[in-house]
Image (cartoon, rainbow, N blue to C red):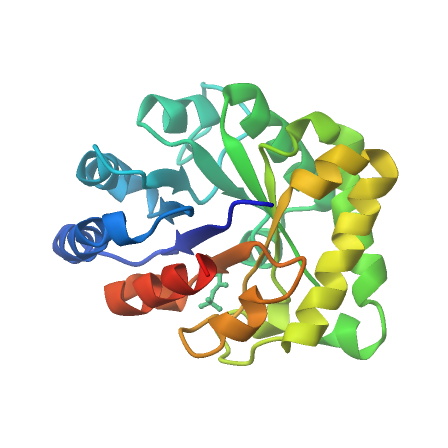
Length: 251
Ligand code: PEP
């Protein structure tokens, strides 16, 4: 039985006061969220505050990205060891916004996954196809290419501590969710790929669904056999919605 995990990706949102209220509302409800891992991924600048607010709770904090070098002349970047130093235990890697807006290739995502693992962070590796790729029947080949790039560079050792998030690009922030069946199909495919390498790891690894998850569609998605929780964008900025989604994942 895999322990469900729900991670909130705030993206580039949140002021200190909004974060304060949001996390306080969530931590107040923490005791009602048993048998579930909850991860909050705020913008870098809010990490120290969120980590402090989560002290004494089971909530963990994560970064939304990391630089592959540990330190040095990389203006504007944050390394994995810095995230660890500030209390993060997770980091999102290869989010489609990083791939599409900042040109992150499969190779760089794989390198970042290996770096995260080497730093002691648990990578949440995002994979997923664009609408055009889905319409051209390329979902399986795209997702397989993205997953294999990580396995080849980072090895199966990054899992099961690491996590995979299937996030169809066309469903992120669009209000258009994959149907439970569409999502389950890809989750099963990902688990199958991992099984070819190591059946124990495949059985243990948590595969999250992300893409316009809301309190009303979460129950059906999370009921699917290979969906072990969610990576939540927009709905993680509202405590009531995020908590409702978390509660669904514990059932
Ligand atoms: C995301 O940013 O990872 C995401 C899934 O966003 P949303 O839930 O808003 O679609």
